Image 1 (cartoon, helix red, strand yellow):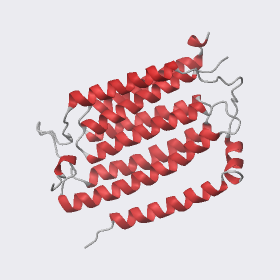
Image 2 (tube, each protein chain N blue to C red):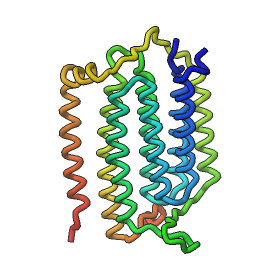
Image 3 (cartoon, rainbow over the protein chains, first blue to last red):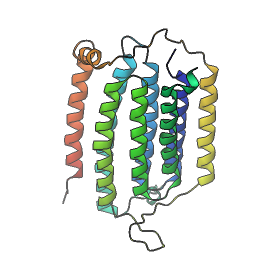
Image 4 (tube, each protein chain N blue to C red):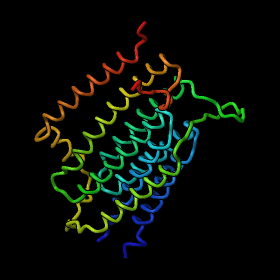
Amino acid sequence: MNEIPLIFFLWVGAFLFASGLSIILIKRNVIFVLMGVELMLNAANLNLIAFSRGDEQNQGLMMGLFVLVIGVCEMSIALAIILQVYRRFKKIDIDQFQSRN
Amino acid sequence: MIMNSPLMIGFLALTFLTCGSAFFMLWTKNVLHAALAMFMTMLGLAGFYVLAFADIMAVSHLMIYVGGVLILILFGIMMTGQRASKTGETNELFTEQKGRFWAFTIGLSVFFGLSWLLGQQHFYAFADIDQHSKLGQVGLSFMLEYSFPFELTGVFLLIALVGATYIAKNHE
């Protein structure tokens, strides 16, 4: 046995997920929140890859590649929306959006 | 023993890189420094993919995240005027934070809860892990059993990128 145990990968994934969640909760800047979302996405992806290490059919690996593409789509559309929000309101804080009850 | 093999030393170094820069992203208030820390996190993650014997994933992750998404984020930071900090230094960008205590509490409890939960499980250990490159297998799978999702993600990516350029257009 010369491989790294599976649980180590899972611990790193858990740490990345928790820090991404904290970034989403703490920061008031929309771009910062998006970075936290990316961190959580990659934590989940790391778990997929770690679980598919010994799989002959590479199912987790294929799923991870598709997740990568979907993450890029999400990021580009979110940044385009942020750009429009900035053009309209000159500000991208989360707290500026208040519901009208 | 596994603990002092070169693979394990590399894993520990990557863990310090990845987790340290992820924590720095959480700690800093400067959004540009956070983008730089995200770059280091993505480098560490690509290293993890290499250590998990998924070379194609590591290369595509590096190309897409470091080459694409990070540049996109930097453009986003530049095109949405960030506030400077009160100290008056010219390239200090400042982000408001709120509810620090609760966020840290929730983050810590998620981390320890997940670690505990994963430690409880007994995952089936694969007898022999294939340490060779998976590039050929992945290419064949894309053309054979995953051909429909492959085409679907291609069309989805096209639609998303065209939609993103349309949304970002200056509608006047």
